[in-house]
Image (tube, helix red, strand yellow):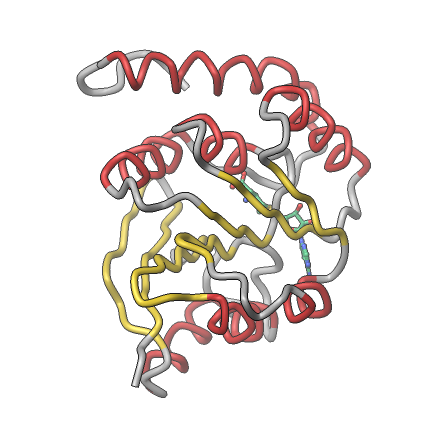
Length: 206
Ligand SMILES: C[S@@+](CC[C@H](N)C(=O)[O-])C[C@H]1O[C@@H](n2cnc3c(N)ncnc32)[C@H](O)[C@@H]1O
């Protein structure tokens, strides 16, 4: 992440410094990593959360090195993040320990397969932003998005990663097409950068 981002205001400087402090501690894990948010996505996430101050409680499926997690947590001190990860890589739990050092009391890691773990979250819990970025192959994207719908309120942003030809053809596109056709979710915005893409949806309330 470089410092040439648009207009560097004070808020962004604090965000950048906080995020970079985390990144320096975890960057050794990048060699083994299975893929993280890219710079354009980090900047998009920053703008989204700054633009919507009501975003405070975030759920993400897929933590990996915690790049998206640290991005969310670095935007404002009132953000809390719950991450679900299968933790098949040792470094996920090491990154969790660093998140706890840098953002004490603001992060929860639920370990296990998202298909089992997400439905165990109490139904009373509602999230303002849900980032779906776990297993990108069928049937996971469809089931993950179906499973997070009970945790949406009317303003919740559902952000789905890998909505792109390079990584989305094995299940992400199919899930989004099916759930849109069934009128379960509605499309808000698609963003593309490099060979990556992500999209924002909202749950449809009857
Ligand atoms: C693409 S990475 C997440 C990247 C992260 N969100 C970011 O943007 O920096 C996907 C993560 O999901 C985890 N994962 C894969 N299948 C999963 C499943 N069924 N349940 C929970 N986590 C899963 C992987 O082990 C990996 O850590």
